[in-house]
Image 1: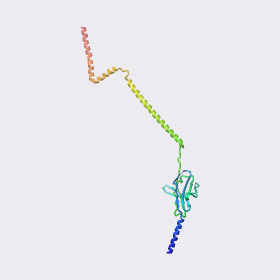
Image 2: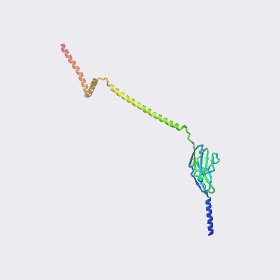
Image 3: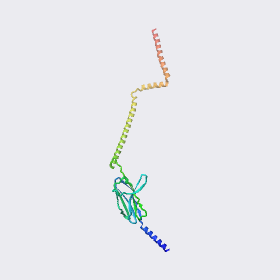
Image 4: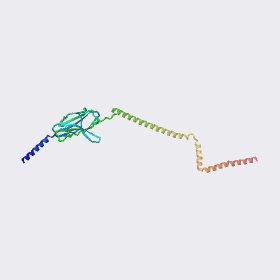
Length: 246
């Protein structure tokens, strides 16, 4: 019984000592993303806090491939564009490491993370990481300042207003001209009847109306009667002349 208790105490002490020798790492929030113009400098950092000082830190980059997969690979520190510091101890025991990338290229885009490793760590961990996006600036055909753009817009507005006013003025002039032509046409129609003899117009109108009322047959009959009457008159005149001679 005493031997069993002794062995239990030995194992318990070893476990406590082992837990105390472990390092606990707490990850601090990283910047989610960073956009950098082509050939400019990018500065990335990762921060953490450890219970027993600093741990070994290595920068990794994960580049997304064509098929959508990504595998982390170590950042090439032999590149003269890359500078990695040894870590700076901040307030509250927070350790921060910085990666400086000069003259960034398009293929430098990816997720940058710190790989934390130590013999006293149970498991190696990656920090949250920062996604770096290197973009090519849009090339402007005309490099115009904002003040110049505002002046151009104001000039366009004035020109549009002048065009609208000019079009409206032309339409008003055209409408006035058409109204004057209509008035002149009406006046000319009124002048047609000036200088006419009203009696002649009335007699002609009476004849037209009479012909319409009596009809064409009556007009023919009247013409026949009118033709017969001169014949009888000639006969009567001939008889009177013959009587006179006798």
